[in-house]
Length: 512
Image 1: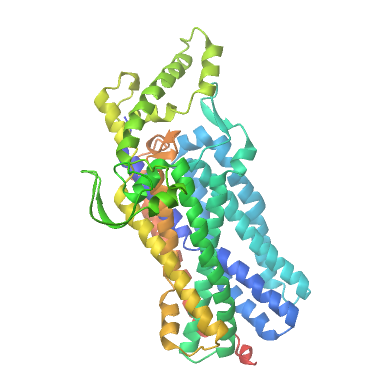
Image 2: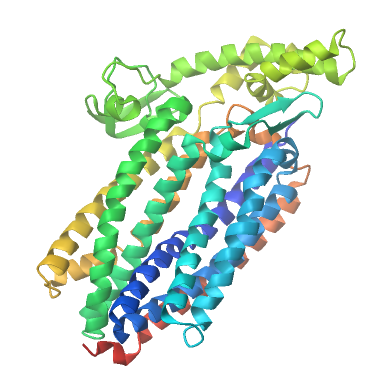
């Protein structure tokens, strides 16, 4: 039987390390492109203030980049230490984008980070700008390949079950790389990272204005950050809508859970602004709804349904029963009892889509072909993720996104258009907004990863089957070690960021 304690601890460890790592990733991507913009202005105008701006924000970028590298290395090792069966079962597919990320994107970014930091007096202006541009390209390419791998876990296209190796193997690398889900995840995540970079520059620059120092530096930084941030914030909302639409097409249970939609409604479905979902009773208490909105967002139509959780659970029961038929054929092959091995292999190559649903029964018994109706019902109910955290995480994330649009609009109007940099309420609002992009980004991952449960590969491999054969004690020990190490790195990062932000840029940048 599966030891769910090991599963939960392994999930917690990966979640902790991933969320720590993702504290650094968005700022790296966002600041990289802002550095390209600032240095481009320096190359075009020749004004030293823009060079010093690039150097100062580049110093904070380098601190953040170093911490991101340190926290990211251990993530991939966990696929071998804690998720060995997952790596065995889908490694032929999942490992490809990860390998490309390391060989292409990470090395590209790391190489040009060095040239950016140490090449100011050793390269021409245009040569150094090109190095900065390639550094930004590398950071974005790194995100691309990671998100292609993550998207495949959500929408496993381009791969087929091989009954001879008993593994998933690549059928079309093109489909894996060009998945619509991967594209939507990439542009949405990158736009959110750009918002993070813009808020970071805006907040620190407003701090300088509140302290009445480095004013020329701060004003120019604000002008860049508000323009860039307004476009990025609008993109996040638009591209987030695309992600929501694709969830409705490919992850119906996730979509229903985000909305806490227990029953299938008449189209177009309403959007629940607020409520308290109760998974036990399958009801949402104290709900406040906007008619039609969710149906339009989720289906982009007025006549298509968003299927409710209860109906999806019933569908899962049928998928489990069909999966047991496929599992029976698989067992014949594994035990050498097949009368037509070639025919059975061909059958499984064409009929494996429900096999993963049958594997959900492994949580309750090893001989799943003898599963009872009660056990099938339990396994079907397991396809419902934890609705409460997904429901609230999504709404807080969306609220942050709308707030960013409002804030950047106000800042752009008052500071870029009217050139009024003395509105204390606006400066304070920008300063105190600093932590919000990270909160929104982390909640976005909560929605994405919680929403995929109970699957590590959606519809293919249940999460509990992907773990390694290790003890609880081993996972607890490594988890405690990671928490201590990562917390230490985070404290160092915050200390260095605050220290150099307070020191500020070189004084000569205040020369007009």
